[in-house]
Amino acid sequence: MKFKDCPWCYGKGCNQCKIELDKAMKDSMEPIFTTKLDSPEEIELANEVIGREAIEKAFGPDGGGLQEVKLNAAVASMKRVLRKQNSKK
Image (cartoon, rainbow, N blue to C red):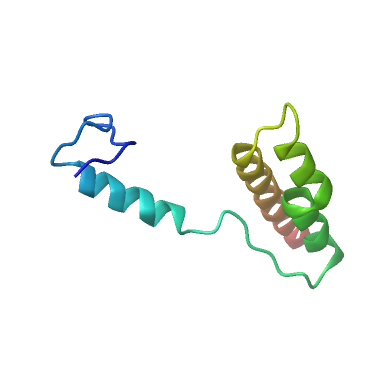
């Protein structure tokens, strides 16, 4: 078996390809961002990740593509955590 992103053989084919493919498939199945659209704050965070302007910027000229979407999701998730911590004080 050959897995093109295998860190061991770099896609030439080795006994680690199946294991690395399974790990990559498992990682790719997890959502990069989830939200509940029941509050204005959550809608704001969703727009930062999957809103029209965010998607156009990410996939437009000079955009970062999926990596930019993932970064936006991470930033939005961090904002959610910080807001939650601040509301407890």
